[in-house]
Length: 196
Image (cartoon, rainbow, N blue to C red; front, side, top):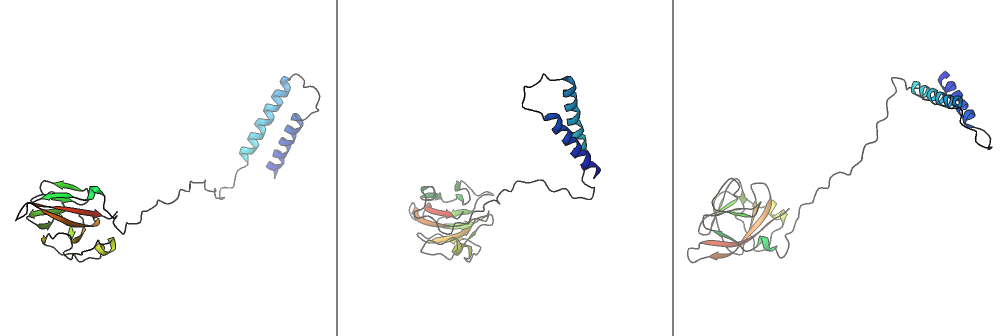
């Protein structure tokens, strides 16, 4: 209570010192400047002495409330037609393909998903899963996620859609469009899609 009385007294003193009539402004007096400075100092000292009790919780400082990150909903249907970058890909016998990057690799490595091991024969490598249960229509993401997957080599047939789960866990499909060369074939031309 004493601190509040002291604070009100200081504020009253300042109001009196700053108050006055609307007459001409007198020359500043050194004593007035000192008095105003002392009053400001006293007010600041009085305010810093008023402290919260030690058991009073300090309110948290405001924090920025950023919206939560937006998570993309997985794509369910492939575009029709597929983009040119996903069509007409040539894979020769002995070459390998990475579904995640869309790269043809000269030989199997740790990034390879499907290896055209010999004429019209897919080999699943590095933990990729390719479904041997093919469809004649474009599958959706849900269809490929729920497809039956088995290990082993798969015969490549044209215009049938094979679902896959890449070695990075991406879901998609591959469809051979044509064989290259004579009999036996020297490779295939295919389209593929990865649902993102």
